[in-house]
Length: 209
Image 1 (cartoon, rainbow, N blue to C red):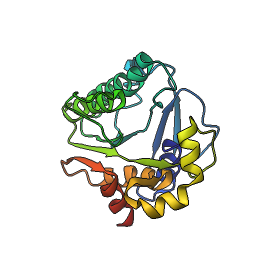
Image 2 (cartoon, rainbow, N blue to C red; image 1 turned 60 degrees about the horizontal axis):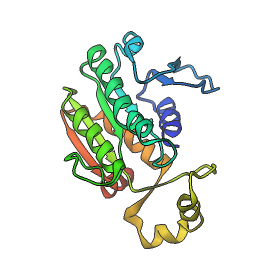
Image 3 (tube, rainbow, N blue to C red; image 1 turned 90 degrees about the vertical axis):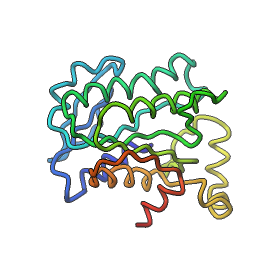
Image 4 (cartoon, helix red, strand yellow; image 1 turned 120 degrees about the horizontal axis):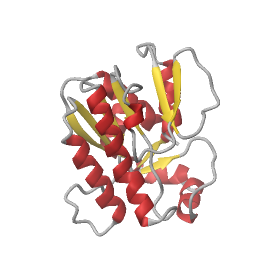
């Protein structure tokens, strides 16, 4: 939902010379800037060491919905995958900037009773301590899927139906998926030694800027 827009935006960006896409399934697209790498298991990214060499930045959008998978699988995707990917990236491209899709309510203290908050917080804490010169944590609220899709549950179906009204009433608690993707790409061009956490209001400010 977000990663596809980040990819498109990066490919179109005049300051981007090359884009490496890493995923479990083929994208089905071709572009002169694009190098596509298929990787079946993000629990072990050791085989990506060469692929990740010489990278200036990484935009990490991989995730899963709460309730869509078991708790063990949810923690693996939310915590283990980004940490393992970042471990290999840091060894291969130690000066790369890292842009990470987290979520509103993430709790690095680990005290939250909500699994999503604990796991996202755990991932954030690990990424911020891994030695990257620039780390950007994005904590969006409701992400509006610009392109129609099969919604994961009833609450998301309802939010999509009432989105025009929701956006008017709660402008700081929503963001379009394409706008979020653009913000995640744009910040990595800063590369000035920042370790920043962007809440939804901050992300909207980046979009407006």
